[in-house]
Length: 228
Ligand SMILES: *Cc1c(COP(=O)(O)O)cnc(C)c1O
Image 1 (spheres, protein in one colour):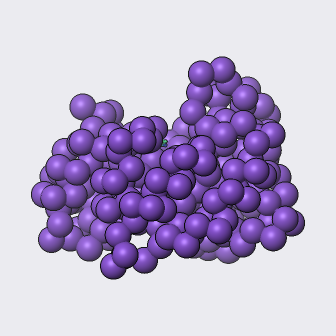
Image 2 (cartoon, protein in one colour):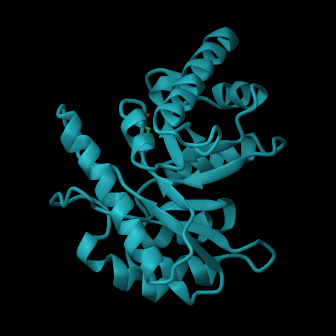
């Protein structure tokens, strides 16, 4: 198992480094978030031994059990799943980053519930970049308002944007969605937001995402294999 994970980690890291090179970006400018949802604690422990420190989880109850079981490790936990209002207390208490803030009410609750002894919670706004019906994410047209609303909250630190574009076999359409997210980030930067993080790219499309400016790729299957 250790060998398998070590091989897949090497493969993913070389994909990232090659994508950085092709995009003429600095080596190491893209970081890896290992998406460990529905993977066993043992696999996370092994990844951590291989040097991975950032892990992403989507399901709160499952994540809380893992955090408890792995609390002897110095890991950085990112919440990347849908957020219901009644989950905000646990998310604000146990995670360093949240990638999936898509409405003001959730941002305000996370701010109010972030424990005083912890540093501000790093947040990304999830954008429904392909404008799909019934999909999580702030509509692009409402993004400027949402960012402005959350900007003044002292217990949050707005770091950037995240999206999960619609899956498509058309590489140009895929690339265009990532470009839209980068352009949205640049618009917010022009409005004075200091943003440094663009969370985009998963197992199947990380190259395109890096070509369009991703700074953190969220990789599950390509690292751990199929989810259980
Ligand atoms: C599951 C998940 C991923 C990882 O997807 P893979 O295709 O397994 O790499 C990335 N981002 C989010 C938000 C996810 O829910």
